[in-house]
Length: 156
Image (cartoon, rainbow, N blue to C red; front, top):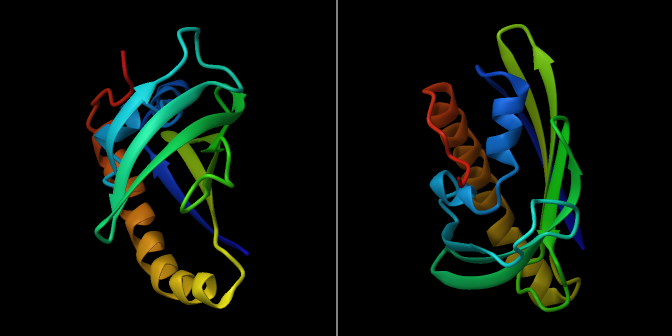
């Protein structure tokens, strides 16, 4: 069962700066409080299919997943998600669409969380989704604060 929510935020930096930072699945550890470790698994430049090992936690649960770049269209669109959702405890997908606005860049984020459709999955989703949504929103605001302040949060 898919649970999707969307949010928008304006970052006061040019679109290329915002894209470079939001699309780095290694540097996202600097602003995503859900992540504790990140590692790029491929040597070549980022492209559709690039993979990253992510270790994170949420509500006391430790998770490990392989995140894969699903869409890479600089500087306008980026999406990533679990490379094999059947092996993930909490399969997720993040999609960022960027557009230029006066004084900065609008980020439209679509977050999709896939839960099991059985009774346990529905019960877990009813507890997890509101908290996860709040955390994702908080993390995007942290991203904005850091990038607005001129911090480089992408891996170099």
